[in-house]
Image (tube, rainbow, N blue to C red; front, side, top):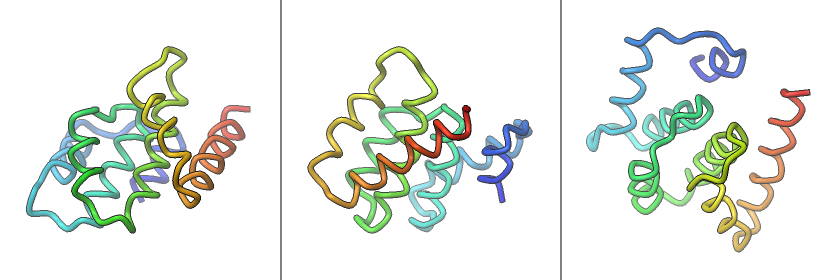
Length: 113
């Protein structure tokens, strides 16, 4: 549900945003919840490099496409080169993640049109 709120450009209360950030950083939280929280943070353009890299290296591989999508959206939100731009460039070696990157870019561009 939060994903739909953020995609619609609606404002998220600071309390709700804090809860999402807490879930993303909670080492005891379920991986699916953490991946969803990181996705929301990425779509909100607030993805922190250190948290992202820590989660990328530790999370189950099956959840990486969701995180790759969030990183693409985060990178697309900024004109200047960021760590997210550089990281997206490394995803070309995985055929599944290549598809995710292309789809994320197309979806973001369609929303901005």
